[in-house]
Length: 205
Image (cartoon, rainbow, N blue to C red; front, side):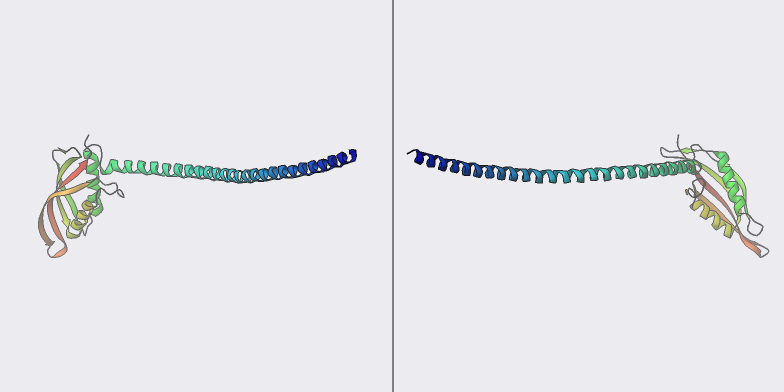
């Protein structure tokens, strides 16, 4: 009877060992599977973090480049604005500025006048200033004796006045009266005498 009990006990021990071994394998398998999943998640997260770090670095570089470009553009825009403001002081001055306007009209006369192509301003008559909410106007009447070619040049100068490319006061013609003299004894250019009224513009204070 004792031997039978001993055999039964040995069988139970073997079964217990097998059960423990199976349980250990199951536990190790579960732990391995769990660890593998965690490692996969960690690997994905690490790659995401590395990608984010790389993205942040790229964005920082782009921000730095954008700041540099902005500073360059800002400086260029400031310089351009200063240049335009300076030119506007000539094109559309803050006041009537009779003196500068007279200088500019004298410069036009000097530029056009020559022996073969005359351009002579005989009279300058500044009239009363006209004020509007947007701008003010200084009318000026002139008597001019000119060759036909210089007459055309004068009209072109008036037409293109106010351009930012030139520091020439903005003005236009409000009225003009022509008188054709012909030529002196049939020799030389055709002469035109005309009376013109210009409107010279300036800023309203």
